Length: 141
Image (cartoon, rainbow, N blue to C red):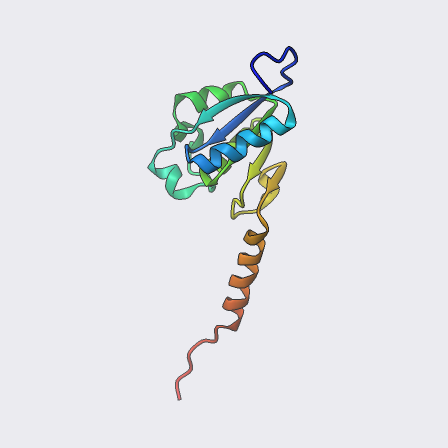
């Protein structure tokens, strides 16, 4: 999709924390979907950085004024990548937006319409569960 394209497609809001990998993945998906990307680098405060994707009180206010404004007029579609964007897309879904989350949010995926997670995320969870199951409590003689 280029700026000179006469039919840019529907607007897709792309949310990320500024990390280059998160930004590239979200923008690439928006481009593949054929929409015009509206990029928002999230300005998350310390509380969101610590808790995301879990929801602190008044979570929308912890991302700065641009995101607060976006919540008042939710877009039709948003794509987020990374843990901080996972909370932002979760809040947008509550507001009525269709949302896609790239990378494992590490909580129940029901908070998003689509979660795109790499295979290793599932394997890591399985490995951790197996290690926890094998751990036996210490017994005294």
